[in-house]
Amino acid sequence: MNLPGLAHPSASGADPRPAALRALLALAVVFILLATTGWTAVHRPEGGTPLRTAALDAWSKARLAGRPVPPADAPVRTVARFFASLDGAQRARLADGYPLVVGNLEGAPVATRYRANRRGLEQARLVEEARSHDVALTPADRAEATRRAHRFASLAEPGRQILTFDPTGGGRVAEVFGDLVGAERVSVIVPGVDTDLITFERTQRRLTSPVGMAEALYEAERAAAPKGRTAVIAWAGYTAPTGVGMDAATGRMAFDGAVRLKALTVALPGDASVALFCHSYGSVVCGVAARELPKRVTDVVVAGSPGMRAQNVAGLRTSARVWATRDEGDWIADVPHLEVGGVGHGADPVSPEFGARLLSSARARSHTGYFAPGTDSVANFARIGTGAFASVVCATGDDACRRGISGTEQY
Image (tube, rainbow, N blue to C red; front, side, top):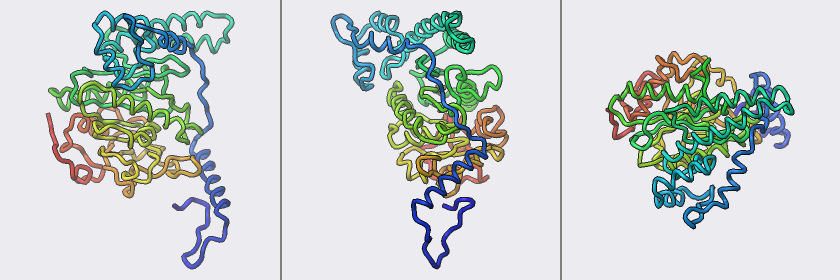
């Protein structure tokens, strides 16, 4: 791959520079390009409350009717079998007694997790409200506690379906739109940088938040397939980088996120097919997870991607269809699509050489506009999410992105 500012050997002779020097020069170019495209080193502080740590300790000693409960990190099938053996009252007792564990147990019944997370949110809100008045804390910490208390109160409002809630550090959370248990198709939003409990939903710039993206996609899917049984998950179930800094330029957080994303897709109820919609750094998470995803994940869609940590679709080693889109005005195009010494995320998913199915994103308006109503991108996402592949609009203006797809169905 040619790097700006570096001389390259002629066809008639080998490059005389040592390999180590060439690597250092390439790495220097990467850092310069990161700096000049606005990437700054920002790290997320580990604040918040130790509620889940205490909950995990209590869970490890818990017993129900003389039986030990499964470990918090037990396989999905083990957890599912355990809860299947309980009656409704027993499930409720565990949800109410250990909400910050049960609410995050992949394999536990969805309704039990919703109940647990409502209780967990209330516990966490009370803790944050107390911290907001603690004069031993700094004014900044008290203000942060106030913001978290308000967010937890919002998430606990009646009718919301919170599938995951962990207040540790920046926090992890996921919300379901639609009937997850009865769905035939499930769409999962995998967001990028600056995603945490506070930014999970926004009043201003709503469509830049996971909740806003999921709501927009769910509305578009319902419009595209009124009789379709679909659900959408806003998934902020991993610790995302803060800002476009070194954490965002490496794959460290993506590898942890990939483990959690795989666990989510394996544990979803029923046999619904799953489509992942991966935005920005979220596409790095999806790329790392790709080879480990279950067969039920039929489609991986990336928008505004800095790379998927693979040189091409074949390198992802997935049976899922891989789709990619990028708006013409998206600044992510200026980020170097390469990987040197662990920095960068590899080839550009919208390049012809990568081999993804290229989607139109007309009217998306830069990096954060892919889920805006009226855009080709969100309309295409809805068509993929509902299985209406024959209606997908390709970036090339022809049918290239739709070729080879069998079993096309429209509701």
